[in-house]
Image 1 (cartoon, rainbow, N blue to C red):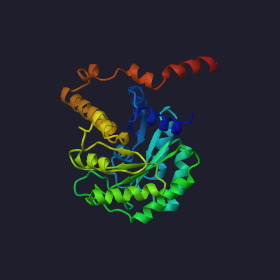
Image 2: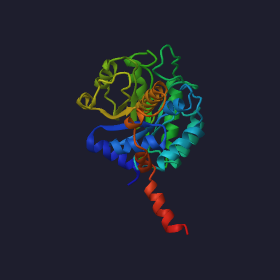
Image 3: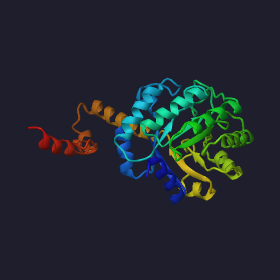
Image 4: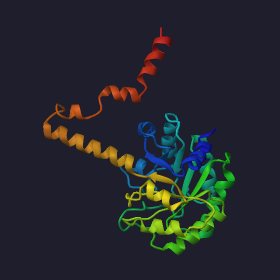
Length: 290
């Protein structure tokens, strides 16, 4: 069974899949060990890893390199964050082929103009494409995919742009008409009221996905009660957790004048060896190197 088919099956089995953001093979390995259903190949996290804002500054090549590296170290399905699709419908056709070959099980394409600005930043420019133009992108993606189980998820930023629920619903239905398998609805409100209201109003034929970063109290129990949300993507928690750990550790080392105190509070190097599969390499070395 392909990873894409497994992702669809998992959604049908559990009614809600939990997808953790990853920015490296190591973060993907840790997410798989923790028990997540899939991975979010995050543009935001990769941008942050490079110390850059999430404003279409990272190229498709850089993102694909990350995705291939992750796919080589995990068995989990990968949902690729491809922002606006790197251009118009022709660019989307090229991108879908590349992402399928790289190991993605799904892509999320958002209806912003290129270059985009990350959704949650205060005062950010949030401009949306015309509905008909974005429908063309979704139709191009659906037509191009080789695996029928590969998910094309249309993300509307209507709520992020302050255009309201009616506009968000209109756009979502138009994208379903173009062939989208799911709708990702996003909000920057600090509570989940917009998402819950949209979910209750949504009568479309496909399920919803959410990214509960700004409204973390929308937990699995509340999501399942809404009945039509099948995917929760934890979109920036990997990089935030990594930055938190490094920031605290680095500051302690400077404050303590060495590693004598922090040494006992971080993973032992033997755990890193395990994550690197060092035993497999040692075994191969003993078998094949003479």
